Image (cartoon, rainbow, N blue to C red; front, side):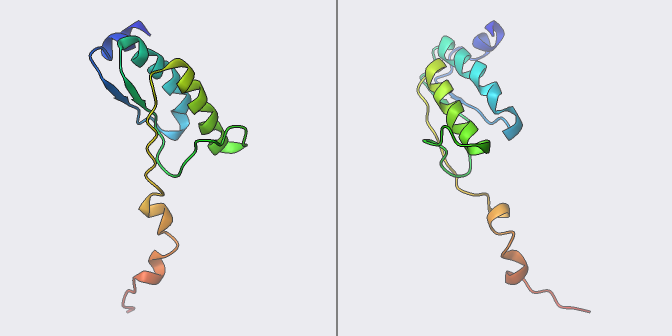
Length: 103
């Protein structure tokens, strides 16, 4: 963790972009950010709001619980929700929106 704290020295804001499978890796990053003096931590969120979902089963509940842990160990959080990704939300509509000539 000392190397990570050193790497984050002089960072005012730390933005995490880890994948869905590595969400728990944000805890030591948040700890190192706080130790390095960062004033804000943006966890990897994306998608829809997941705050106030602690105790639920599945991914959304896990993200809500993780936010509580990050608030305990790191600097203040900024949660940014982008909404659904276009390729996910439009995937059901695209076949009906685009017509290709046959033949």
